[in-house]
Image (tube, rainbow, N blue to C red; front, side, top):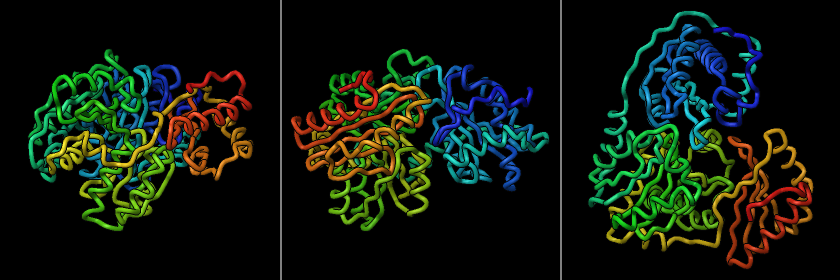
Length: 463
């Protein structure tokens, strides 16, 4: 395998992971070189071992071998835990020396994508560290050696760890939709071990994702789950993304519970036993979270979207819980602080099983507004950040109360808000809206439409 860096596409090195189109932007040579760079980094930090895992994508086995070869060529050892959800890889980094791991996953992206999520010495790599990988490869700043290889299964240990600390007060009937992603290999066994009656939906792993896209943040991907929950008279429906770190929820009545409202329930349960705890949420979440958390005697903190950013903020602030609108949940309370949809699902069932109310009734008691799901508008990778800058230069035209610039532009009005930000994983700008009524929401969207089209008149907008 050559170490020539000319085949390396800089666009794959993103804000909180490495992601690209298989054999186009993310090549076999790139995966090998990334392995070489990470192994070299690990050795320079005094480490000797990196854990690797992969999701169920068709490119996974080949890429895993190349990643392993690159790491070992640096003189660093590889522990291969095979085909697992991303949270199992994170769990493994907590169990073995060095706390370093690399997950080969395309997450919720289409089947022709793959990528790498990286944890080194317990720290999830984000912007600066990911760019340093690229620069190391360009400079060919590599260690050399012959590292060892071993394969090891940790899935049962992961299941046992969750079951040992979560007990359900009553059995629940649960529909699990893995979307043919890798969570289907673990979730049914986990929830049966918790005492649930499990109805499986698309839990056979298939990297072509033949039934629906493995992204529970989009309503169209939850329609089969909604139907099955109603038909089976289940207590709750849980959906997972392609690598098992994002959770979607459907009540017994078939209503989608968006992750920001699910975070309210988690916060309420946590603050009942840990008052004053800090709770982090991302810029896409409902405005109800701040007053709700304060009313429960907690400390709310809005932060950037992105699992790496949230985990870093969790460590910095010593927060006990965090959540993102995309469905990532991070429990430092009783767990390790990494994003884990399987564990979050178990915590949800623990809350629901402790009371006799239906899931529909439990969630109906939480504050809500008129809101949209995440809306996407296609852009090129080259233009998305320049478009955001142009929009930022024209926020004065919006007549807003204020604009939050933590991540993108969250424009606040008297009775609602709208957000636009650049996706860090796909060639889209992401939007979301919330208001006290349909008419107010429509008015905010009208202002946004005028603002967006003033920058790019040919945009086809999703609202």
